[in-house]
Length: 173
Image (cartoon, rainbow, N blue to C red; front, side, top):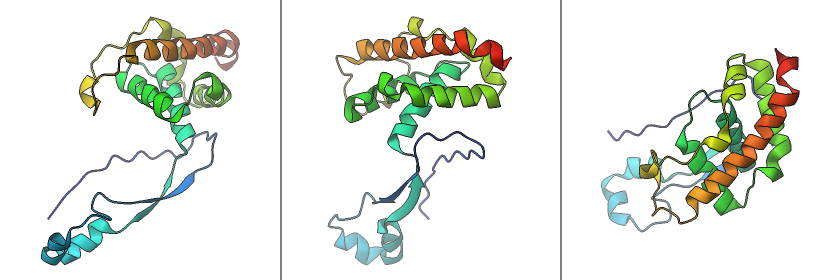
């Protein structure tokens, strides 16, 4: 039998800035010319080429959630920076244009989960440089602008973090 794994995260209580999106996901085999494969493995072929309908996060929601995660994580994960860089580059998203959504998500997280309070106070994102731990996750060569772009994203998030810490933290504690 063929096996695959998928990571699924379940949130029962979360703030949502953008509505969910209904998506029909294709497959790697869909639309390709695989008559021999179909003839040999008809049942599996039908299963693995059938489109899958999913309710998904809006891309903007993912961007905002990545921003929230960077500000409230205890330990920096370079993957968040890579994801924000990629979404900024390919979708044109910027931290400033999503500031209201980021503020909403972070404030919700701080009001709901106590563990984030110390993290956000201590996380100075402007001092984080991209440390190349997750370069192996890139499916392309390292872009020339990645370090500068990630530094800019960190500085923009740090500005929002400072705003939250200076105005919200005392009222939450």
